[in-house]
Length: 180
Image (cartoon, rainbow, N blue to C red; front, side, top):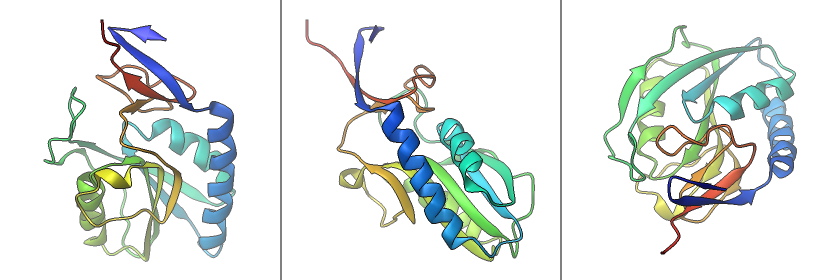
């Protein structure tokens, strides 16, 4: 697929993603099987497709809430300055919380969000990330569950964007800029 002078090569198929989401949900159900309600916190905007698919597979009492952060803007590099654009609507003190992230890259965003949420004293605070790029990590942080570990490539699709484009792709694709 060509769009605005870049090409997207499929990296992880929609079928592979669906199978992994189902497996992740099974593992998460096992960890939270004693909860009266799991508060699933999606990090917007990139996690919205993943969180929708994941909560449909959970078979637990869930409440969904969102935090919107910004550290990329329209660029391919993190600014490392994490801004909270939208905070949670509900309280999490004493509650079981699962943070759902699209991709753990440098770790700055996830670290910032987890510190903020931990200060609100949840009963349990776990993380599920669709993608992990450990080679880019600048902060010592790791998700409890990871869908896929990927190399240092800029990816789009399945909710993840490049300058607000390509979120609607049903697969994860690698962005490359062909030489003339």
